[in-house]
Image (cartoon, rainbow, N blue to C red; front, side):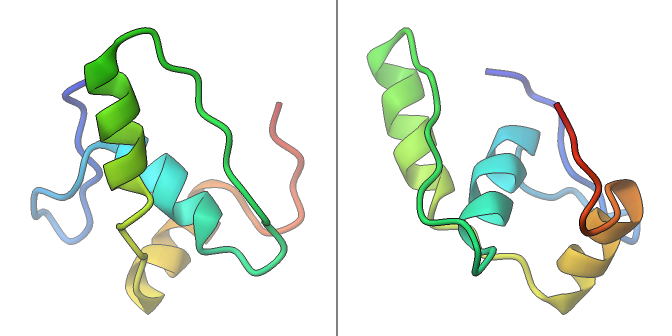
Length: 73
């Protein structure tokens, strides 16, 4: 798992993978997030990641990176 961290306002934040899973899971139009895992630790980390919920400032920062409605593949 990457040790890259999401930073907002210069503070350490959750792992980028946590932001990815939790951020997607928080979207009202997303019913589920499917993550690949190759180790038991990754399964545990993916399940825990769903517990992170972005606040309004996190959503604004993420929307700045990928504007709503923009397709990312």
